Image (cartoon, rainbow, N blue to C red; front, top):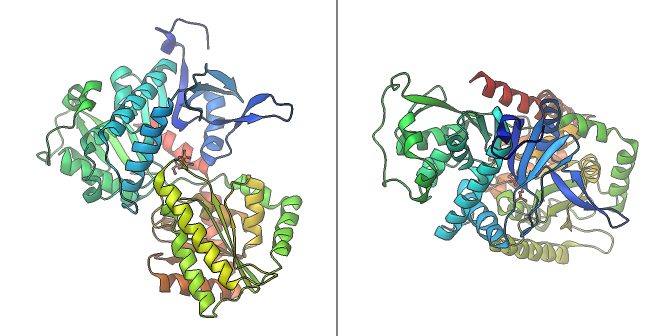
Length: 503
Ligand code: F6P
Protein backbone atom coordinates (compact mmCIF):
# COMPACT_ATOMS: atom_id res chain seq x y z
CA UNK A 1 0.00 0.00 0.00
CA UNK A 2 1.32 3.46 -0.84
CA UNK A 3 1.42 6.35 1.63
CA UNK A 4 -1.72 8.53 1.50
CA UNK A 5 -3.71 10.84 3.71
CA UNK A 6 -6.37 9.21 5.86
CA UNK A 7 -9.12 10.81 3.81
CA UNK A 8 -8.31 9.14 0.51
CA UNK A 9 -6.64 6.07 2.01
CA UNK A 10 -9.49 3.79 0.94
CA UNK A 11 -8.66 4.44 -2.70
CA UNK A 12 -5.37 2.63 -2.17
CA UNK A 13 -6.24 0.43 0.85
CA UNK A 14 -6.72 -3.32 1.08
CA UNK A 15 -8.81 -5.34 -1.36
CA UNK A 16 -9.80 -7.99 1.18
CA UNK A 17 -10.58 -7.13 4.78
CA UNK A 18 -11.58 -9.53 7.54
CA UNK A 19 -13.28 -8.02 10.57
CA UNK A 20 -13.47 -10.12 13.73
CA UNK A 21 -13.71 -9.41 17.44
CA UNK A 22 -10.24 -10.85 17.89
CA UNK A 23 -7.19 -10.06 15.81
CA UNK A 24 -5.56 -12.96 13.92
CA UNK A 25 -2.45 -12.85 16.15
CA UNK A 26 -1.64 -13.42 19.82
CA UNK A 27 0.98 -11.53 21.77
CA UNK A 28 3.84 -13.77 22.89
CA UNK A 29 6.82 -13.20 25.18
CA UNK A 30 10.05 -14.80 23.95
CA UNK A 31 12.54 -16.42 26.34
CA UNK A 32 14.69 -13.24 26.23
CA UNK A 33 11.68 -11.26 27.44
CA UNK A 34 11.00 -9.56 24.10
CA UNK A 35 7.37 -9.19 23.03
CA UNK A 36 6.23 -10.37 19.61
CA UNK A 37 3.19 -11.65 17.75
CA UNK A 38 2.27 -15.15 16.68
CA UNK A 39 -0.45 -16.13 14.23
CA UNK A 40 -3.50 -17.52 16.09
CA UNK A 41 -3.76 -21.29 15.71
CA UNK A 42 -7.52 -21.44 14.86
CA UNK A 43 -8.98 -22.80 11.62
CA UNK A 44 -10.46 -19.45 10.56
CA UNK A 45 -7.06 -17.75 10.48
CA UNK A 46 -5.51 -20.75 8.73
CA UNK A 47 -8.21 -20.68 6.05
CA UNK A 48 -8.07 -16.95 5.44
CA UNK A 49 -4.33 -16.33 5.67
CA UNK A 50 -3.60 -17.58 2.09
CA UNK A 51 -6.41 -15.41 0.68
CA UNK A 52 -5.00 -12.50 2.66
CA UNK A 53 -1.48 -12.81 1.37
CA UNK A 54 -2.56 -13.37 -2.25
CA UNK A 55 -5.02 -10.48 -2.37
CA UNK A 56 -3.42 -7.82 -0.16
CA UNK A 57 -5.49 -8.49 2.91
CA UNK A 58 -6.03 -6.70 6.20
CA UNK A 59 -7.50 -7.98 9.46
CA UNK A 60 -9.39 -5.63 11.76
CA UNK A 61 -9.87 -6.81 15.35
CA UNK A 62 -9.29 -6.29 19.05
CA UNK A 63 -5.81 -7.32 20.21
CA UNK A 64 -7.04 -8.67 23.56
CA UNK A 65 -5.72 -6.10 26.06
CA UNK A 66 -8.01 -3.42 27.51
CA UNK A 67 -7.12 0.28 27.64
CA UNK A 68 -4.35 0.00 25.06
CA UNK A 69 -4.17 1.65 21.66
CA UNK A 70 -1.79 0.07 19.15
CA UNK A 71 -0.68 1.31 15.76
CA UNK A 72 -1.49 -0.91 12.77
CA UNK A 73 1.34 -3.34 11.92
CA UNK A 74 2.24 -6.10 9.47
CA UNK A 75 2.88 -9.69 10.48
CA UNK A 76 3.15 -12.90 8.47
CA UNK A 77 1.93 -11.32 5.18
CA UNK A 78 -1.09 -9.79 6.93
CA UNK A 79 -1.85 -6.19 7.71
CA UNK A 80 -3.25 -6.04 11.24
CA UNK A 81 -5.40 -3.15 12.32
CA UNK A 82 -6.02 -3.25 16.10
CA UNK A 83 -9.28 -1.78 17.44
CA UNK A 84 -8.96 -0.57 21.05
CA UNK A 85 -11.44 -1.45 23.79
CA UNK A 86 -11.49 0.22 27.18
CA UNK A 87 -11.79 -1.84 30.37
CA UNK A 88 -15.40 -0.66 30.66
CA UNK A 89 -16.12 -1.73 27.08
CA UNK A 90 -14.66 -5.18 27.72
CA UNK A 91 -17.16 -5.40 30.57
CA UNK A 92 -20.17 -4.00 28.71
CA UNK A 93 -19.58 -4.97 25.08
CA UNK A 94 -17.63 -8.26 25.35
CA UNK A 95 -18.59 -9.82 28.67
CA UNK A 96 -21.92 -8.01 28.78
CA UNK A 97 -23.89 -7.74 25.55
CA UNK A 98 -21.90 -10.30 23.53
CA UNK A 99 -21.56 -13.00 26.18
CA UNK A 100 -24.21 -12.15 28.76
CA UNK A 101 -27.04 -11.28 26.32
CA UNK A 102 -26.46 -12.67 22.82
CA UNK A 103 -24.54 -15.86 23.67
CA UNK A 104 -27.20 -17.35 25.99
CA UNK A 105 -30.07 -16.06 23.82
CA UNK A 106 -28.61 -17.59 20.66
CA UNK A 107 -27.90 -20.88 22.47
CA UNK A 108 -31.54 -21.66 23.29
CA UNK A 109 -31.49 -19.69 26.61
CA UNK A 110 -29.62 -22.54 28.36
CA UNK A 111 -28.57 -19.72 30.70
CA UNK A 112 -30.77 -16.66 31.23
CA UNK A 113 -29.88 -13.82 28.87
CA UNK A 114 -29.56 -10.44 30.58
CA UNK A 115 -30.89 -7.35 28.87
CA UNK A 116 -29.17 -4.14 29.94
CA UNK A 117 -29.50 -0.91 28.00
CA UNK A 118 -26.01 0.26 28.88
CA UNK A 119 -24.61 -3.01 27.45
CA UNK A 120 -26.52 -2.37 24.22
CA UNK A 121 -25.13 1.18 24.09
CA UNK A 122 -21.59 -0.19 24.37
CA UNK A 123 -22.35 -2.80 21.67
CA UNK A 124 -23.48 -0.08 19.25
CA UNK A 125 -20.51 2.12 20.07
CA UNK A 126 -17.94 -0.65 19.61
CA UNK A 127 -19.60 -1.92 16.40
CA UNK A 128 -19.44 1.63 15.07
CA UNK A 129 -15.72 1.78 15.90
CA UNK A 130 -15.10 -1.49 14.03
CA UNK A 131 -17.10 -0.21 11.03
CA UNK A 132 -15.11 3.04 10.93
CA UNK A 133 -11.78 1.24 11.22
CA UNK A 134 -12.82 -1.06 8.37
CA UNK A 135 -13.97 1.85 6.22
CA UNK A 136 -10.53 3.35 6.65
CA UNK A 137 -8.51 0.30 5.55
CA UNK A 138 -10.73 -1.08 2.75
CA UNK A 139 -9.79 -0.18 -0.84
CA UNK A 140 -12.41 1.08 -3.26
CA UNK A 141 -14.78 -1.83 -4.13
CA UNK A 142 -12.98 -4.05 -1.61
CA UNK A 143 -14.47 -7.27 -0.24
CA UNK A 144 -15.09 -7.20 3.51
CA UNK A 145 -15.88 -10.32 5.52
CA UNK A 146 -17.32 -9.63 8.99
CA UNK A 147 -17.22 -12.48 11.51
CA UNK A 148 -19.65 -13.44 14.24
CA UNK A 149 -22.24 -12.32 16.74
CA UNK A 150 -20.11 -9.67 18.45
CA UNK A 151 -20.27 -7.56 15.25
CA UNK A 152 -23.79 -7.91 13.87
CA UNK A 153 -24.31 -4.17 13.37
CA UNK A 154 -21.10 -3.72 11.40
CA UNK A 155 -22.49 -4.69 7.95
CA UNK A 156 -25.11 -1.92 7.84
CA UNK A 157 -22.90 0.61 9.63
CA UNK A 158 -20.15 -0.06 7.10
CA UNK A 159 -22.57 0.14 4.16
CA UNK A 160 -23.68 3.56 5.38
CA UNK A 161 -20.09 4.83 5.27
CA UNK A 162 -18.82 2.82 2.29
CA UNK A 163 -21.62 1.77 -0.09
CA UNK A 164 -18.96 0.73 -2.65
CA UNK A 165 -17.67 -2.32 -0.73
CA UNK A 166 -18.98 -5.87 -1.01
CA UNK A 167 -19.91 -7.18 2.44
CA UNK A 168 -20.11 -10.76 3.70
CA UNK A 169 -21.02 -11.82 7.24
CA UNK A 170 -20.63 -15.21 8.89
CA UNK A 171 -22.37 -16.18 12.12
CA UNK A 172 -20.26 -18.84 13.89
CA UNK A 173 -22.91 -19.60 16.50
CA UNK A 174 -26.53 -20.74 16.10
CA UNK A 175 -29.26 -18.28 15.15
CA UNK A 176 -32.19 -18.84 17.53
CA UNK A 177 -35.78 -19.69 16.60
CA UNK A 178 -37.84 -16.50 16.00
CA UNK A 179 -39.81 -16.99 19.23
CA UNK A 180 -36.61 -16.76 21.30
CA UNK A 181 -34.99 -14.06 19.17
CA UNK A 182 -38.14 -11.99 19.74
CA UNK A 183 -37.11 -11.54 23.38
CA UNK A 184 -34.26 -9.26 22.34
CA UNK A 185 -35.36 -5.67 22.92
CA UNK A 186 -33.14 -4.56 19.99
CA UNK A 187 -34.17 -7.33 17.58
CA UNK A 188 -35.06 -4.97 14.68
CA UNK A 189 -31.72 -3.20 14.87
CA UNK A 190 -29.81 -6.47 14.91
CA UNK A 191 -31.66 -7.80 11.85
CA UNK A 192 -31.11 -4.54 9.97
CA UNK A 193 -27.47 -4.54 10.96
CA UNK A 194 -27.01 -8.03 9.47
CA UNK A 195 -29.02 -7.21 6.35
CA UNK A 196 -26.40 -4.61 5.49
CA UNK A 197 -24.38 -7.60 4.19
CA UNK A 198 -24.72 -8.91 0.63
CA UNK A 199 -24.27 -12.46 1.93
CA UNK A 200 -25.07 -13.69 5.46
CA UNK A 201 -23.67 -17.15 6.19
CA UNK A 202 -24.97 -19.48 8.89
CA UNK A 203 -23.73 -22.84 10.16
CA UNK A 204 -26.91 -24.84 9.58
CA UNK A 205 -29.85 -24.69 7.21
CA UNK A 206 -32.08 -24.28 10.28
CA UNK A 207 -30.13 -21.19 11.43
CA UNK A 208 -30.60 -19.53 8.02
CA UNK A 209 -34.31 -20.38 8.11
CA UNK A 210 -34.67 -19.01 11.67
CA UNK A 211 -33.16 -15.72 10.53
CA UNK A 212 -35.38 -15.57 7.44
CA UNK A 213 -38.49 -16.29 9.50
CA UNK A 214 -37.60 -13.52 11.98
CA UNK A 215 -37.01 -11.04 9.12
CA UNK A 216 -40.28 -11.99 7.41
CA UNK A 217 -42.29 -11.79 10.63
CA UNK A 218 -40.78 -8.63 12.11
CA UNK A 219 -39.64 -6.56 9.15
CA UNK A 220 -42.10 -7.93 6.58
CA UNK A 221 -39.45 -8.12 3.83
CA UNK A 222 -40.10 -10.40 0.86
CA UNK A 223 -37.83 -13.49 0.77
CA UNK A 224 -37.40 -16.02 -2.03
CA UNK A 225 -34.78 -18.78 -2.41
CA UNK A 226 -32.70 -17.43 0.53
CA UNK A 227 -32.73 -13.93 -0.99
CA UNK A 228 -34.06 -11.15 1.21
CA UNK A 229 -35.39 -8.17 -0.78
CA UNK A 230 -34.28 -5.23 1.36
CA UNK A 231 -36.19 -2.08 0.34
CA UNK A 232 -33.76 0.74 -0.43
CA UNK A 233 -35.86 2.97 1.78
CA UNK A 234 -34.83 0.67 4.68
CA UNK A 235 -31.19 1.68 4.07
CA UNK A 236 -32.18 5.32 4.01
CA UNK A 237 -34.31 4.90 7.13
CA UNK A 238 -31.52 3.23 9.04
CA UNK A 239 -28.49 5.45 8.95
CA UNK A 240 -26.25 5.08 11.97
CA UNK A 241 -28.47 7.12 14.26
CA UNK A 242 -31.32 4.72 13.34
CA UNK A 243 -29.66 2.26 15.69
CA UNK A 244 -30.29 4.39 18.76
CA UNK A 245 -33.87 3.21 19.13
CA UNK A 246 -35.75 0.17 17.94
CA UNK A 247 -38.70 0.73 15.58
CA UNK A 248 -42.27 0.27 16.72
CA UNK A 249 -43.17 -2.97 18.49
CA UNK A 250 -44.71 -5.99 16.86
CA UNK A 251 -44.68 -7.29 13.34
CA UNK A 252 -44.49 -5.37 10.08
CA UNK A 253 -47.00 -5.86 7.24
CA UNK A 254 -45.67 -8.65 5.12
CA UNK A 255 -44.68 -8.01 1.49
CA UNK A 256 -46.28 -10.76 -0.54
CA UNK A 257 -44.43 -10.27 -3.82
CA UNK A 258 -41.03 -9.08 -4.97
CA UNK A 259 -40.77 -5.29 -4.89
CA UNK A 260 -40.27 -3.41 -8.18
CA UNK A 261 -36.83 -3.50 -9.76
CA UNK A 262 -34.67 -0.61 -8.54
CA UNK A 263 -36.47 -0.27 -5.18
CA UNK A 264 -34.54 -2.94 -3.29
CA UNK A 265 -31.17 -4.60 -2.92
CA UNK A 266 -30.62 -8.29 -2.29
CA UNK A 267 -29.13 -9.85 0.83
CA UNK A 268 -28.73 -13.61 0.73
CA UNK A 269 -29.05 -15.61 3.98
CA UNK A 270 -27.83 -19.15 3.55
CA UNK A 271 -25.95 -22.04 5.20
CA UNK A 272 -22.16 -22.53 4.86
CA UNK A 273 -21.12 -25.12 7.48
CA UNK A 274 -17.59 -24.35 8.64
CA UNK A 275 -14.92 -27.02 8.96
CA UNK A 276 -11.32 -27.54 10.07
CA UNK A 277 -7.83 -27.49 8.60
CA UNK A 278 -8.07 -31.22 7.93
CA UNK A 279 -4.64 -31.59 6.29
CA UNK A 280 -2.92 -30.08 9.32
CA UNK A 281 -4.66 -32.48 11.72
CA UNK A 282 -3.88 -35.47 9.48
CA UNK A 283 -0.25 -34.37 9.22
CA UNK A 284 0.05 -34.08 13.00
CA UNK A 285 -1.61 -37.46 13.49
CA UNK A 286 1.13 -39.00 11.31
CA UNK A 287 3.93 -37.37 13.30
CA UNK A 288 5.91 -40.09 15.18
CA UNK A 289 6.45 -37.76 18.16
CA UNK A 290 2.71 -37.23 18.50
CA UNK A 291 1.99 -40.94 18.08
CA UNK A 292 4.53 -41.66 20.84
CA UNK A 293 2.94 -38.99 23.03
CA UNK A 294 -0.47 -40.67 22.57
CA UNK A 295 1.00 -43.97 23.81
CA UNK A 296 2.57 -42.14 26.74
CA UNK A 297 -0.81 -40.59 27.66
CA UNK A 298 -2.40 -44.06 27.71
CA UNK A 299 0.41 -45.38 29.88
CA UNK A 300 0.18 -42.42 32.28
CA UNK A 301 -3.52 -43.17 32.69
CA UNK A 302 -2.64 -46.77 33.65
CA UNK A 303 -3.38 -48.32 30.24
CA UNK A 304 -7.14 -48.58 30.66
CA UNK A 305 -9.08 -50.59 28.08
CA UNK A 306 -11.22 -47.63 27.06
CA UNK A 307 -10.46 -43.91 27.31
CA UNK A 308 -13.40 -41.54 26.93
CA UNK A 309 -12.42 -37.99 26.01
CA UNK A 310 -14.20 -34.65 26.32
CA UNK A 311 -12.58 -31.45 25.02
CA UNK A 312 -14.47 -28.23 25.49
CA UNK A 313 -14.18 -24.60 26.39
CA UNK A 314 -15.59 -24.43 29.90
CA UNK A 315 -19.00 -23.25 28.71
CA UNK A 316 -22.53 -24.12 29.86
CA UNK A 317 -23.51 -24.83 26.23
CA UNK A 318 -21.19 -27.85 26.08
CA UNK A 319 -23.21 -30.23 28.25
CA UNK A 320 -20.24 -31.17 30.45
CA UNK A 321 -22.44 -31.70 33.52
CA UNK A 322 -24.81 -33.99 31.55
CA UNK A 323 -21.83 -36.05 30.43
CA UNK A 324 -20.54 -36.36 33.98
CA UNK A 325 -23.94 -37.28 35.34
CA UNK A 326 -24.24 -40.10 32.79
CA UNK A 327 -20.70 -41.28 33.57
CA UNK A 328 -21.28 -41.18 37.33
CA UNK A 329 -24.47 -43.26 37.04
CA UNK A 330 -22.69 -45.83 34.87
CA UNK A 331 -19.97 -46.16 37.54
CA UNK A 332 -22.60 -46.45 40.29
CA UNK A 333 -24.42 -49.18 38.36
CA UNK A 334 -21.17 -51.04 37.71
CA UNK A 335 -21.61 -50.75 33.95
CA UNK A 336 -18.22 -49.01 33.79
CA UNK A 337 -15.26 -49.76 36.08
CA UNK A 338 -12.45 -47.46 37.13
CA UNK A 339 -9.21 -49.00 35.88
CA UNK A 340 -10.86 -50.55 32.85
CA UNK A 341 -12.47 -47.22 31.86
CA UNK A 342 -11.24 -43.66 32.30
CA UNK A 343 -12.63 -40.32 31.29
CA UNK A 344 -10.35 -37.40 30.39
CA UNK A 345 -12.05 -34.03 30.45
CA UNK A 346 -10.17 -31.04 29.10
CA UNK A 347 -12.02 -27.84 30.04
CA UNK A 348 -10.17 -24.84 28.67
CA UNK A 349 -10.62 -21.61 30.62
CA UNK A 350 -13.05 -19.22 28.96
CA UNK A 351 -14.76 -15.87 29.70
CA UNK A 352 -13.71 -16.00 33.30
CA UNK A 353 -15.05 -12.51 34.00
CA UNK A 354 -18.65 -13.63 33.31
CA UNK A 355 -20.56 -14.79 36.39
CA UNK A 356 -22.39 -17.72 34.75
CA UNK A 357 -19.00 -19.14 33.69
CA UNK A 358 -17.62 -18.80 37.22
CA UNK A 359 -20.65 -20.64 38.61
CA UNK A 360 -20.32 -23.40 36.03
CA UNK A 361 -16.68 -23.94 36.95
CA UNK A 362 -17.61 -24.36 40.61
CA UNK A 363 -20.37 -26.84 39.76
CA UNK A 364 -18.18 -28.95 37.49
CA UNK A 365 -15.26 -29.02 39.87
CA UNK A 366 -17.59 -30.02 42.70
CA UNK A 367 -18.96 -32.88 40.56
CA UNK A 368 -15.46 -34.07 39.54
CA UNK A 369 -14.33 -34.01 43.18
CA UNK A 370 -17.39 -35.99 44.27
CA UNK A 371 -17.10 -38.60 41.50
CA UNK A 372 -13.36 -39.09 41.97
CA UNK A 373 -13.71 -39.15 45.75
CA UNK A 374 -16.21 -41.96 45.46
CA UNK A 375 -14.74 -44.06 42.67
CA UNK A 376 -10.97 -43.48 42.44
CA UNK A 377 -8.59 -46.22 43.50
CA UNK A 378 -4.97 -45.68 44.60
CA UNK A 379 -3.75 -46.37 41.07
CA UNK A 380 -6.60 -45.15 38.86
CA UNK A 381 -8.83 -42.16 38.49
CA UNK A 382 -12.45 -42.00 37.31
CA UNK A 383 -12.18 -38.58 35.66
CA UNK A 384 -8.88 -36.86 34.85
CA UNK A 385 -10.02 -33.23 34.77
CA UNK A 386 -7.69 -30.57 33.33
CA UNK A 387 -8.61 -26.90 33.40
CA UNK A 388 -6.03 -25.83 30.81
CA UNK A 389 -5.63 -24.91 27.16
CA UNK A 390 -3.25 -27.09 25.18
CA UNK A 391 -1.39 -26.60 21.90
CA UNK A 392 -2.81 -28.45 18.91
CA UNK A 393 0.02 -31.05 19.04
CA UNK A 394 -1.11 -32.20 22.50
CA UNK A 395 -4.74 -32.15 21.37
CA UNK A 396 -3.99 -34.48 18.46
CA UNK A 397 -2.09 -36.81 20.81
CA UNK A 398 -5.21 -36.90 23.01
CA UNK A 399 -7.43 -37.61 19.98
CA UNK A 400 -5.14 -40.52 19.09
CA UNK A 401 -5.15 -41.82 22.66
CA UNK A 402 -8.95 -41.72 23.07
CA UNK A 403 -11.14 -44.66 22.06
CA UNK A 404 -14.33 -42.65 22.39
CA UNK A 405 -14.90 -38.94 21.92
CA UNK A 406 -17.85 -37.47 23.82
CA UNK A 407 -19.43 -34.33 22.33
CA UNK A 408 -22.60 -33.68 24.34
CA UNK A 409 -23.28 -29.99 23.67
CA UNK A 410 -26.78 -28.75 24.48
CA UNK A 411 -26.42 -26.32 21.58
CA UNK A 412 -23.36 -25.61 19.44
CA UNK A 413 -22.97 -23.66 16.19
CA UNK A 414 -20.73 -26.37 14.73
CA UNK A 415 -18.31 -28.12 17.17
CA UNK A 416 -14.95 -28.37 15.48
CA UNK A 417 -13.57 -30.76 18.11
CA UNK A 418 -15.84 -33.48 16.68
CA UNK A 419 -14.37 -32.91 13.21
CA UNK A 420 -10.79 -32.79 14.52
CA UNK A 421 -11.24 -36.13 16.29
CA UNK A 422 -12.49 -37.71 13.06
CA UNK A 423 -9.64 -36.19 11.03
CA UNK A 424 -7.06 -37.58 13.47
CA UNK A 425 -8.41 -41.19 13.39
CA UNK A 426 -6.78 -42.09 10.10
CA UNK A 427 -6.65 -45.83 10.90
CA UNK A 428 -10.45 -45.92 11.04
CA UNK A 429 -10.67 -46.69 14.75
CA UNK A 430 -12.44 -44.58 17.37
CA UNK A 431 -16.08 -43.82 18.10
CA UNK A 432 -17.70 -40.40 18.11
CA UNK A 433 -20.70 -39.83 20.38
CA UNK A 434 -22.26 -36.63 19.08
CA UNK A 435 -25.08 -34.40 20.24
CA UNK A 436 -27.78 -33.83 17.65
CA UNK A 437 -27.81 -30.18 18.80
CA UNK A 438 -24.46 -29.40 17.18
CA UNK A 439 -24.04 -28.09 13.64
CA UNK A 440 -21.63 -30.98 13.07
CA UNK A 441 -24.50 -33.47 13.49
CA UNK A 442 -25.89 -32.34 10.12
CA UNK A 443 -22.78 -33.68 8.39
CA UNK A 444 -21.45 -36.42 10.71
CA UNK A 445 -24.44 -38.72 10.38
CA UNK A 446 -22.49 -41.91 11.16
CA UNK A 447 -21.61 -40.78 14.69
CA UNK A 448 -23.63 -42.22 17.58
CA UNK A 449 -26.11 -39.34 17.67
CA UNK A 450 -27.67 -38.53 21.02
CA UNK A 451 -29.94 -36.08 22.79
CA UNK A 452 -27.78 -35.03 25.78
CA UNK A 453 -30.86 -34.08 27.81
CA UNK A 454 -31.87 -37.74 27.72
CA UNK A 455 -29.42 -39.13 30.31
CA UNK A 456 -30.54 -42.73 29.73
CA UNK A 457 -29.93 -42.41 25.99
CA UNK A 458 -26.55 -40.82 26.66
CA UNK A 459 -25.62 -43.66 29.05
CA UNK A 460 -26.69 -46.25 26.48
CA UNK A 461 -24.56 -44.54 23.80
CA UNK A 462 -21.51 -44.42 26.10
CA UNK A 463 -21.83 -48.15 26.80
CA UNK A 464 -22.52 -48.91 23.13
CA UNK A 465 -19.42 -46.90 22.11
CA UNK A 466 -17.30 -48.99 24.47
CA UNK A 467 -18.47 -52.35 23.11
CA UNK A 468 -19.16 -51.53 19.45
CA UNK A 469 -18.10 -54.26 17.06
CA UNK A 470 -14.79 -53.34 15.34
CA UNK A 471 -16.25 -53.80 11.87
CA UNK A 472 -19.03 -51.32 12.72
CA UNK A 473 -16.51 -48.89 14.26
CA UNK A 474 -14.44 -48.85 11.07
CA UNK A 475 -17.43 -48.55 8.77
CA UNK A 476 -18.70 -45.54 10.68
CA UNK A 477 -15.30 -43.86 10.96
CA UNK A 478 -14.56 -44.36 7.26
CA UNK A 479 -17.76 -42.60 6.32
CA UNK A 480 -17.16 -39.77 8.85
CA UNK A 481 -13.64 -39.28 7.53
CA UNK A 482 -14.84 -39.06 3.92
CA UNK A 483 -16.96 -36.08 4.98
CA UNK A 484 -14.25 -34.27 6.93
CA UNK A 485 -11.50 -34.89 4.39
CA UNK A 486 -13.59 -33.61 1.48
CA UNK A 487 -14.99 -30.57 3.33
CA UNK A 488 -12.15 -28.63 4.93
CA UNK A 489 -12.10 -25.02 6.11
CA UNK A 490 -10.27 -23.90 2.97
CA UNK A 491 -13.16 -25.18 0.87
CA UNK A 492 -15.60 -23.44 3.22
CA UNK A 493 -13.84 -20.07 2.76
CA UNK A 494 -13.58 -20.51 -1.02
CA UNK A 495 -17.27 -21.37 -1.37
CA UNK A 496 -18.31 -18.39 0.73
CA UNK A 497 -16.08 -15.98 -1.22
CA UNK A 498 -17.18 -17.44 -4.53
CA UNK A 499 -20.86 -16.91 -3.69
CA UNK A 500 -20.19 -13.41 -2.38
CA UNK A 501 -18.52 -12.46 -5.65
CA UNK A 502 -21.34 -13.99 -7.70
CA UNK A 503 -23.92 -11.78 -6.00
O1 F6P B 1 -17.75 -19.89 18.74
C1 F6P B 1 -17.74 -18.52 18.86
C2 F6P B 1 -16.45 -17.99 19.42
O2 F6P B 1 -16.49 -16.59 19.44
C3 F6P B 1 -15.23 -18.47 18.65
O3 F6P B 1 -15.00 -17.70 17.53
C4 F6P B 1 -14.16 -18.41 19.69
O4 F6P B 1 -13.10 -19.27 19.43
C5 F6P B 1 -14.89 -18.82 20.94
O5 F6P B 1 -16.23 -18.46 20.75
C6 F6P B 1 -14.32 -18.18 22.21
O6 F6P B 1 -14.45 -16.82 22.07
P1 F6P B 1 -13.86 -15.70 23.02
O7 F6P B 1 -12.77 -16.28 23.85
O8 F6P B 1 -13.37 -14.65 22.07
O9 F6P B 1 -15.02 -15.21 23.83
